Length: 313
Image 1 (tube, rainbow, N blue to C red):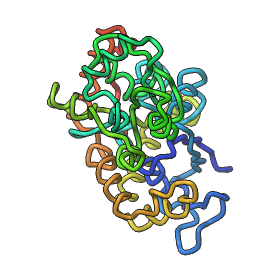
Image 2: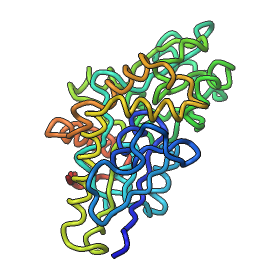
Image 3: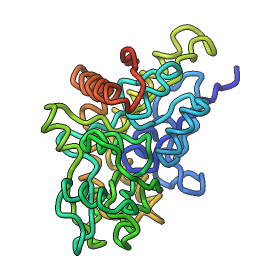
């Protein structure tokens, strides 16, 4: 029987990069095996083979919403209410900000001094904008919830936001991924941590990224496939956590245009933040956080109501 290929889309930030190598093996940017590292899966994937690839998270959000063709995908938590009929959330693979999260940054010289100062400047000058990594990102959703009003924004690739703010092309920027730890080198200063603000207000972690799986796997490949594949994903996250040396070697192999991945201390810090116990298992607290976020967002008219949350795995 030929192997069954399942597509697995993930973002290019380090926590997503390292979660799935136990299902695929370690490959370099050229697709070739990396000497000294596993060239194939280290887990039993049964008849399935996973084809993983990295895309910007907003591109994955739009693909899930517009096409829904990937079997497994990372998406922003904000995107889930738009795809909940087609996808379920996997128990493993989420990114949760536990008292920290996306940062709102400004220029150190001449930038707003606080969120209230930023809102005032935006009201006074309609040409000013906030750079965001996408309208379906949780970072944008929480910014809107905190603002309590519409915010003039400019969407751009997450990696372009720090330099855009530094050049004055945006009055402020919302940073995700490793840029949360490296922005000061560009002369930027934080005026808000959206994860901390959310936790201070709710007492809950901020759901940032989710891993979702198509609900039709059972009808396509047989009863029990959905939960079996979701459990494989959980096994992969646990294996990646158990072998941090391989995870870091994978990032080093892909560090050509990501110099921050050659900083071992920074990589360790970021992975501790976003590959947490809630990444291994959302648990009741993670589900409660999702319920609160989706409920507030739907009540504010910022997303559809989910009608409940299904976790598989």
